[in-house]
Image (cartoon, rainbow, N blue to C red; front, side, top):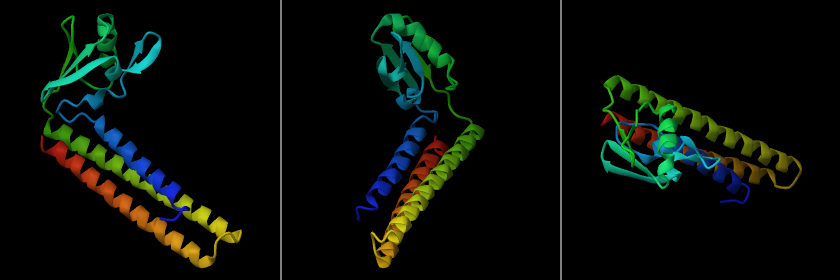
Length: 184
């Protein structure tokens, strides 16, 4: 790969990583600790993700258990989960907080699958924007005489192949996540 295309491939990789992180926060009826990634709690004056203030375990397929390292954090963690968009009411027994994930209805699964496809489409747009930006930069450096015209064509071809590769990777991940949602 050329040095000119490397930074753009990094941006494309980052786009896939961001999508994967978003997929991890989608609640699919199975306990997944990543649903807590965006839920913040005030931990001694610092906004901290819930999953970083204690042990998070998955004792059963549809049960998530949070045991704060500091027992005085139980109420704050419980409150943070209740005020989030998670849609699960936590239970607190004084030692641990439990989140029971309900089975998803067919309608909810279809809605989640649509969300996954939408996030996938948004990521494809981001990949195409990276390609467009790269081509603009390549054309500018060709105009300045820093690279010959045939090298410009090679770079445009290279960035198109990278875009195709990452779009295909993205499609695989969207398909996989959709299958996971629909098969619960």
